[in-house]
Amino acid sequence: MSNYFKNKLKDRLTYCQDWKHSIDMYLANKEITKLADEEFYKTRPFLKFVLNIYFLPYNLLRLARYLRIRHEYKKNEIEMEVLTKKLKEDSFRVFPISNWTEVNIWEYIEQEEIEIVPLYFSKKRKVVVNSNGIFLLDDDRFKVSKKDQIENLNIRFRTLGCYPLTSGTISNAKTIKDIILELSNSKYSERSGRLIDKDVDGSMELKKQEGYF
Image (cartoon, rainbow, N blue to C red):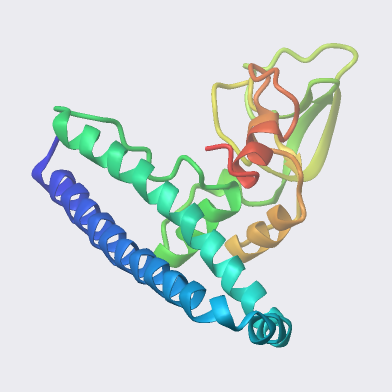
């Protein structure tokens, strides 16, 4: 593990420990206040009844906040355990963009002004259309059968892989902004254009959007 990541983990662990300490103090004070209230209202049951009704909305908010804190407290304990374990290990894997969607990637490309090969943008291209998809026809590598249709269509490629196993998609997106807008309304993954991927169309993208990673 590099010193950079080790220091980042130590910083995060310190933050978690400080947060736990502050919540422990809060819960301890809350318990003391509860005991004091019980002692005070022992001889004032009617007052306690009236105040409970009057402050019911406020008490419900306090209860919701308390439950949320307990939930965050448990998550914090788990995170501390994981961080402590990781710091004892020699190495571990980091996948910083494993949960990025296709739109996230294009937004980053736009932000950083990264140069992109033309095949990602829409253009009228000579293609072969068959039951497997739409394939670029720019040399004699593609073996055209009698069932295939040769057309000139506005297409682009959402993914680039081995030829001719990568299918294009009908599109008018000629800029990065156009691509982001197009993808925002799409339910299919870029991997749906790969013939070697047999999973359900859009499944990987849907898993990312649902927080699977």
